[in-house]
Image 1: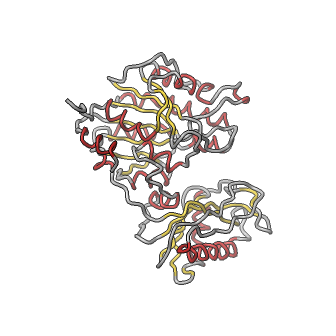
Image 2: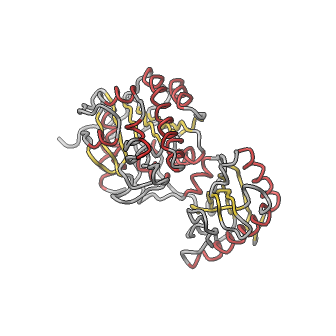
Image 3: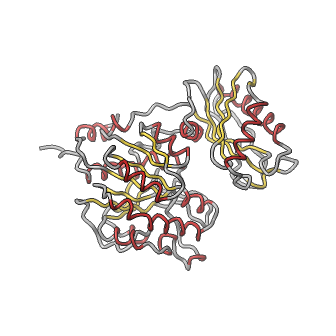
Length: 405
């Protein structure tokens, strides 16, 4: 525990005030010609967010460090008050935990995509056309039936949503210091997984053998006839939010990875369904049972990665339309933000600071008239690292006492 964490620990106090952290994944963006040189937040019709912005304090947060592009895991860890550089968690563990898989000490988990490839193995679609979750389950069952052990190591395969699945390698002397096989672009073959340390050499050979075996099983299937692997990870050790911040936290999410990350920091889990109104209704039903609510909206990020600005706008407008459901059971503190930016013109996560809004009885408010990147640039929160967001939320909920005499 560093000196900042010790300081915070000494100031924490419990009360009945509740905090809602509403995360529109990848909501930050950049001006886009398709939207008349506006961002999706600027282009969208968001009367409820606009009204809320006028009564809130605004700013932008930096998920990691200036210029560093975060993955979803680090992006969310920062929002939960964990330094994402200090507490690095691999994607595989997040996905596995989200599927409620048992992860033992010594296991190595990896997040996988089904992909489309030609006869030479060159990838033409990294997501296999986003096959249905049902199809993913069928292919995972086929793989599980044909690949049970390799070199004495148990192979455990579980389907996720759409093209995603998880593989857990269970055996002796396994290490997660490995490179990914995903080239992160079409037109390339999957990369050979390489060991980053001498002790991980056996694991790298094992994983490459798994790829070859899996490819033999599914090579004649269309469109999912190849696999990509990234985020090899062993089980981490994190102090739960109940200890770290004296909170009783719950996650309201649909996608497995975000449930997984929440579970790793000690949150209870409530399934959200696909629509913003589903998530907000679950909050309404449970608003007195917990004092920290993480509500996750996925598709702002998905459409950003697809380069589909108009669909990203549509999701933002859906959140705005459903927002009164949440506001009817007014939380003591409401924060609306993203875990990172996913600009549609880039079709990828980016380093751009993320817009953030905090509303509470004591937040004060500035001259912001909309929840947009430019309005947040003017806000009273300024620019800050995301790991400090939790301090603002705790302070606005009156859960921090005074420091010093």
